[in-house]
Length: 421
Image 1 (cartoon, helix red, strand yellow):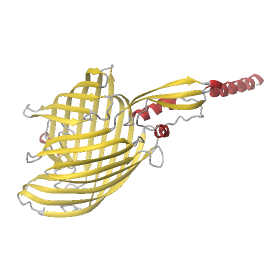
Image 2: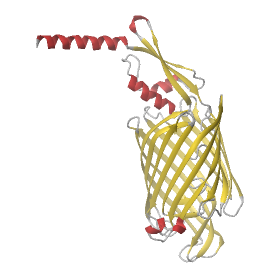
Image 3: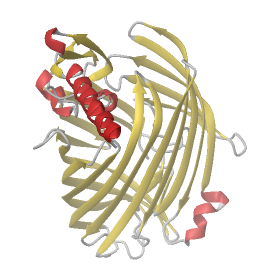
Image 4: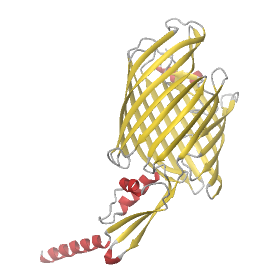
């Protein structure tokens, strides 16, 4: 018993001595150009005047790499006088003032475009400030504000205000028509990181809608003109354990959102909800390859509306299929692709990819099993190219060519900014 007590005391002294030997007196950031050190230090769980904890430092690196301002980061440890240490974070910064340019054809083959400019590290403190203008048959615009350090390093505040207007086609048993659709909304959401992997979001907003018949047939039960104001509530949960290495990704991410809408629709429904989930998995293959999988699921309880929230579309779920080829109130999609680096030098990289996109949708006023009917399913495959700037956030020019696997009848090019997923 006496020897056990002595051994315990010795271990306690050794532990105290070890803690003192690894005591951090300084945390220093190297390589910063625009970002403020105070902003990045708020993100860290490893603080100065604490014992060095390698697990905390490893997790803090993941947090830093998720920041738009950080392209790559690693650490080093310096020994100082008196048994103290300095932890250095070596940062390779991204440029975060990013223009957005999108071009496409609308439902009546008119030319449409989207122009935007967003700073994802405004004032060097991680704020997001942006705006856009969109011509999609009719002009629209929007403003985006985000503070991911609202009140604390684990709380984010987002505000989105926009007005969009376009032509929306509807096809029902009684005929088809185009409606001029104007959408105005202000949304506010508050997110809270529970830890490195888990985050919850709660939000709400007000939206106004206006529908005006603009070509086609009169459809029974649908007025030629209609306006309404609605309230929106949203609850979300995210599991995120993605570990980035420049433009390569490894790990899992799953996002689930439940949305509830109050207010009359064009078919006089008073309320409806949507439930959506997006789950992604990434795996690096040696140093040049990256496997990527994404599953999307969605269901909405507004089955009588001619304007359901889900759509089969080039830029949402199936590359090569076309722009908004079918709408529905439930859908699923599975995207798979293999990305391979063909060239990399300095700031520039080129990736090639091969992909398969599958999806199904439940049309309006049909039973749930039509979600899996052959006429409501889409299968496309193809090849793509990625032109990547390693030090500009989201600076990926994406070009994909998708071919219909059902008879190889349809094919098209798809352009975009950032990876498809």
